[in-house]
Image 1 (cartoon, chains in turn yellow, blue):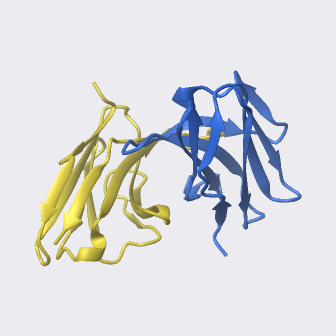
Image 2 (cartoon, rainbow over the protein chains, first blue to last red):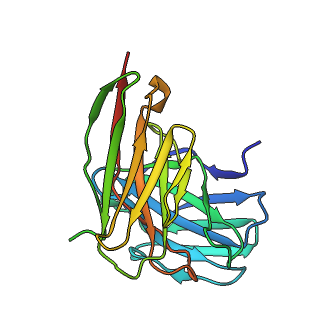
Image 3 (cartoon, rainbow over the protein chains, first blue to last red):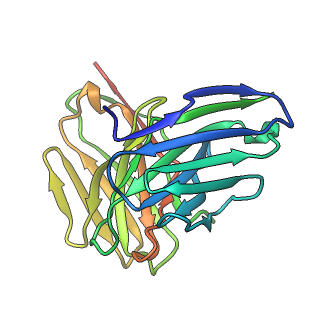
Length: 115
Length: 111
């Protein structure tokens, strides 16, 4: 079984709808991240969390919110989806802090299309 | 200027060829460096970390030049299965582990 899972894997929604993307991990990591990937722009950080109840904005947090209610779960919400939020969304987790070279482990991604 | 810059490619090479990718970063305070591999429509996966002294993992060699702020990845004896996008990744400060991703270099190994 995959260590980092995302649901749904694909989603089509309409402008103005509220949607939630879920991420679960079995790696026991404290740190979790949400990224979006767009062609030509690479991966950009939306939000990250270092522990339960800890929430930090990333590079492009406007229009998004997150919830970290448990160590293993980190959900991303689009309160009112707009077409330029069409992208590939990845959740990631990382090792305990303090290691020389921390590694991030990515989920399989969620393809979101906003019409 | 982008924080991490890569040539997007594509690099089309025959099997068995040696291919090298370069990446430049703008933040001289960057502390950690990585190469990730991303297959089409898949998630990025860590290929290797890049250490100051350079490091090798089988057919893959990574080098870091802090003075010139660039990172390189050398792939020897290319295989068809090496076809993927290679992402250069930089972490400005190790305490937060925030990663800055390049847009990636596409490699296509031809039979």
